[in-house]
Amino acid sequence: MDLLWSAKRVLVISGRGARDAGPELISLLDRLGAVYLDTGESRGLVPDDHPSVVAATRAQAMGEADLVVTLGRRLDFQLAYGSPAVFGAAKFVRIGTVAGELRDNRRGEVGMLADTGLALGAILAAAEGREPATDRTWVEGLRAKHAGRVAKR
Image (cartoon, rainbow, N blue to C red; front, side, top):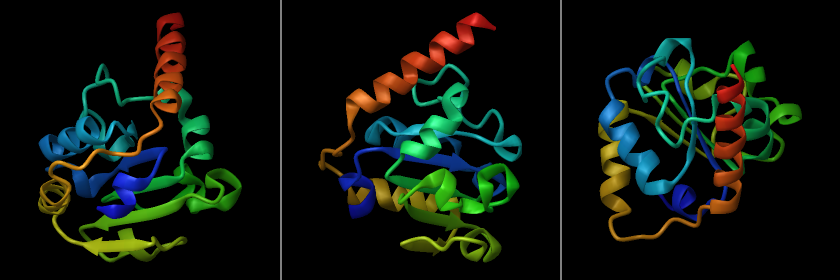
């Protein structure tokens, strides 16, 4: 919780292990003001029109985040195996429902083997009343760029 609420540029990426945690994930995104990318395994978990969705700025979000939270997601080829060449010096928090979602390729500063919804609920409860350090300028810039690209499609 401390890593999440002290980071300025938080990117949340969901996968298969987050499929049953939609409401908790949306609550986290709303409270934290983080940006979000889904994958084929979790498509539709967060509505495409949710303000945290920045799929059209995927590369920029991954390259500029200072904290990446993976929820039930392996770091495979789609996520460049967590490579510093893509994610830079970002720290990782990894929450997984199976061990492989925690230890492949790049371990997190924190790794939790848990039900994703329960883990997110506990994080939200622990952060009650705390203001996130989110860089709103960065988030709004990504959101605007995403909206512009989506509108051109």
